[in-house]
Length: 300
Image 1 (cartoon, helix red, strand yellow):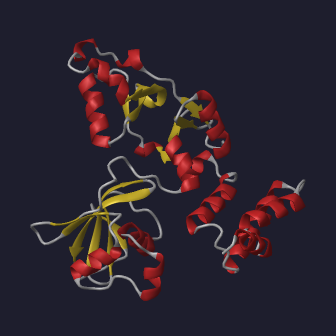
Image 2 (tube, one colour):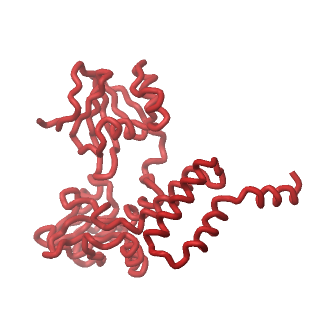
Image 3 (cartoon, rainbow, N blue to C red):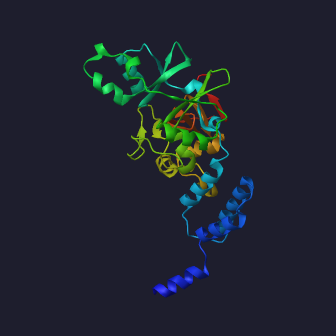
């Protein structure tokens, strides 16, 4: 197609971006809520008309951005019970062990109990003590930590983190008690979706265990497990919406399960959650079973 013809076609079929700009000029000066609703309406209209200007991923990011202004810190924070932290008197070996076991490169540091947070420690700060743990004092390498209320808007937290060059915040209630924890990764994921961990580059594995059960990464495609088992776990329409084992578990349970919980499938399978955090499933075991209660804690 010639350049002039391309330009003529572009003028004949305005892109989603052009529609957004036109609507923004039309709604200038309106209330924030009206503006957000109008922009969401544009995206929905573009999808209904088959506008291919933006990919599905780009549309999702646009929707996330529109919803971002309504979110508060307590909507995404890791709850107090799931915070991995160390006491300020912990030695080098103890700090290294806590980081190794949790998989976190940053840890909250407290004095006495979690309600008295005094800072945080980063794995990079430990390198100078490699092979010389005798001179190590956690208090000497503490980094400051941002303290925020649960009602703070995420957009304000993001601005605060950027201005202070900090990527972690402790959430405290009105009495000063620690409620939870938020990282910059948690905030960004609300816009762009889940970010892969550093060790997630490898393909998700499905491993056969000696007892006949299977162990799998929650990112494993459902179709791969179906091929292994020789059975279907989803209906045709569900296959259009669900790709991974994590998605299958969410579909069965309608929430993120806790570590140690199990979820049974009508096909005669039990999914035992081996590793999870408050936002996602990481690893699970698949067992054959003849019963399928909806969900129970594995230690009951």
